[in-house]
Amino acid sequence: MRAFYVAGGGTPGQRGTTAHGAVAQCLGSGVLQTILQPETGLAIWTRPCRRPPLRAVQALLDGPAFSLIASGPPEAATRALMRQLPADARPLGQDISLLAVQFARLVPDRRVRLRLEHLRDDACRLFHVDAVRLRLLCTYSGQGTEWLSEDDTLHRMAVMQAAVFKGTRHPDAAPRVRHRSPPVSMLPPPRRARLLLCIDETGIFQ
Image (cartoon, rainbow, N blue to C red):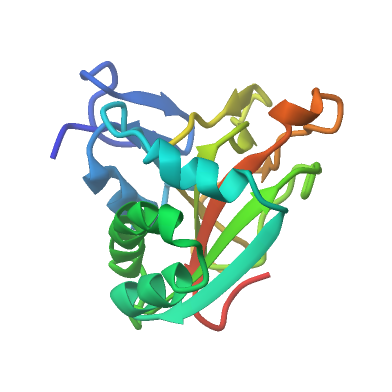
């Protein structure tokens, strides 16, 4: 695992690392585990060498908007989700399964709720904190999720970055990081489409 920095611990300035207050960000997947630390409100896994399967993504964006949900252990939930998608989109399942396994390590019962959405509108355009304990977001195509650091600086997640946010139901007092879906209604129609993966605990989501 590569080194990372979280405000209140570690060493800033290490390779592949940035920090914004209660936010940890790193090239290694182990950074997601820092969301369990009491000072961390957002953990971002930057995956610069990974790209979504382009044909798989395009197979989903060529059709109408949708929201698909599946729950259970990571592998079973991924299979259930993939069965709802066209065959050309199946290669995306490997990455969804990878993220589901990573998220399951953060929650008590190791079960997940997957939601894959093809969006063409502003969705949740107001900055907010989700009514969950933890939530993972990853954008496969289009504009990424926007979030505010403690000084209200606006940041936008890149395609394929995976981020775990603490919500209002998490028991610790870490600063919560407000975020939103990017406003896209003013963009030309071809640029409005987004493919977003959201992972929650089963039974705790909003």
